[in-house]
Image (cartoon, rainbow, N blue to C red; front, top):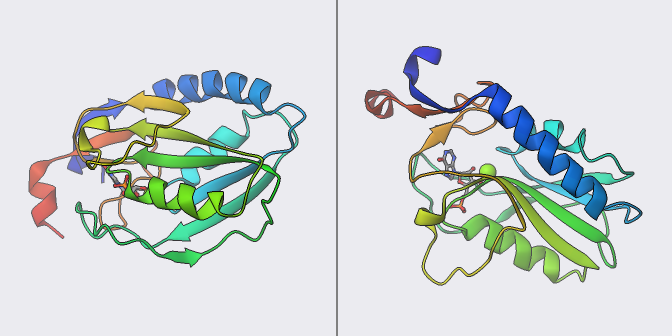
Length: 181
Ligand code: IMP
Ligand code: MG
């Protein structure tokens, strides 16, 4: 698995430090707000587990599962595979995402959740790839872990064809790996 990585973009230590910093900001933001922290499956699971432990306020956890990516190309069509189990009307909602890429999935998630009239709705994404944003998407993340260049990355929850999610760092795959699967 490690042999398939061409370059480590973000080390475990870099990710940990950034999450600690974001945790301080989010702890202040959500003090006394009893937020619902929404994770968008599956890519977010590793980030989610680390991030929530640094948001040191009472909160509720919930998850949504959207239709996913095939390979490195977004299909653009989104569907809710599994919805929240919490009623978020009047609640403070924080969306955690692994990566803000074309913006299709975050845009869809935001519209989906907004229709339920939360008291507030904010986005925290570990990675932001602004160069990939689809024309017409004006949505901005409220909190960004790292802004990264336009490369396909894996690890720390992110996959290529469902592999590499359990790498503890974020890396770029060797080009020959794409032909292997
Ligand atoms: P979107 O293009 O912003 O809708 O991103 C949708 C989803 O595509 C993300 O939640 C990731 O699961 C996946 N994705 C986008 N870019 C990458 C990448 O560089 N590596 C792995 N998955 C990615
Ligand atoms: Mg994802």
